[in-house]
Length: 202
Image (cartoon, rainbow, N blue to C red):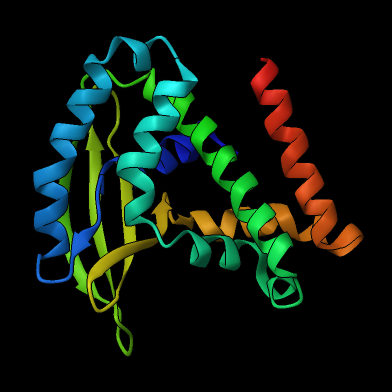
């Protein structure tokens, strides 16, 4: 996957660091929180040095509570999710989460002067979702990002992010599809586990 898309995955989490209460406008929440979290990532020496434990702690505390991670994993896996056992689903979510955490680890160390600017918010017709459009600005060309949020009774939850016209979930689904076609859910779990073990050694 392209580095710009990996950076987008990072910003997916950082721009929504905490559950978004349903009575707060999503764009207002992003504007309020993103600056603080980006500043923390840029000034924390442990994160800047690539300390994976610091990154995991940050992601678990501030990112994952605001992500409907079951929905993200279910969408990335596609139709075979329905036939997966509860244990397989748990393993898929755990390994997929670890994969994204390691993506965040690499991107966090590269944060320097970036800021997040909200450009537009629009509802998704016929749904409980909104898309918040934004740009990550700093040195170099801006990175355009769209966030898809779904509204539950208590909070907004992130379910996808779009960078450069490509939705993150769609991108992962295309990568997972041939693995699932050839070996099923267990093959995907094995592949994700292998990727995470290799990343841990590097």
